[in-house]
Image (tube, rainbow, N blue to C red):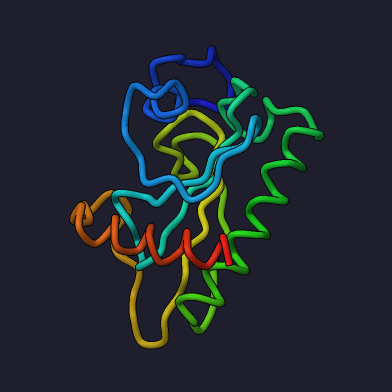
Length: 145
C-alpha cells in the first residue's frame, strides 16, 4: 500500500478499538489505546494507537492527537524500562508498505532491546496467551503503582 489512500475501518486495530477483537490492554483513555503486540519482536513489545483519529499513517493525523499518542508512548516506555530493565528501547513508526507498515492504522512500536538478543522477525511468531497475560499483569501492576 502506498502512503495515500482511504482508511480501512476493518483493519485489526480498528476492530480492537471497537471491541470486536481482543487485545492485552496496558493503557486506555478516550483518545489512546496501548496493548501488547501478539507477534512481538522482543519481550514486552507494545503498540500505541490513536482511538479517535482514522489515520493510516503519520501524514493523516492532526498534531494534537499525535501529541496524545506520544505522551502515552513516553509513559509506557518508562514503565517497560522500569519493569523489564532492557539494555535499550526502540521506538518506531512506519509509513507505507515499503517502509514496513503492515497494519494501516497509525501505530507506534515500543520494543525493549536486551543485550545479546536479536529482534524476532515482525509477525514471525505469535506469543503464547499465558506469556502475554502474565506480562500484562506485571505491567499493569507497575502502571498502577
